[in-house]
Image (cartoon, helix red, strand yellow):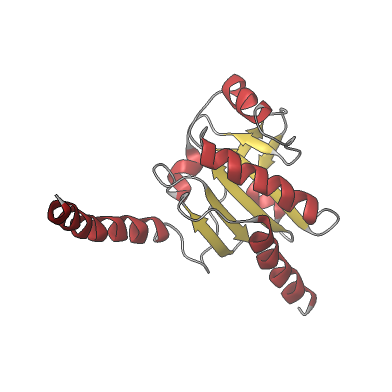
Length: 176
């Protein structure tokens, strides 16, 4: 039995490595972030391009526990960067409706105050290659270029890690 488990484990390693490489290959640091315009759960229209000149922390989520954890972390990021040239955005990229997303947000352990966008056509899921690898968090610089990312729930990013990436960009922006 131990031998069988060892063999299965060895066979799974390349499969898992290939999936992680595939997920990491969606967008690379240094590429322009794909633009989108969606409607927030509160009703206003929000486009990624409208945040040029600001650092954007973008979270792509479905309705799942890892997404709730990462979405809660983004609320902390929003609070930690308040008053700075930083925008935090959450997107339900799986096409869920307003009622479902509203119920999901109501179940968070914190109140989400950053714009949370609905994506009924799964536009961002297609643009950013989400799907199986959720949640996704991107830090996008003032010119709209992806400077940092975490794809999938195997390594959820903590607020301090995300804010450290934001602070690097803020410091670099001040030298321009």
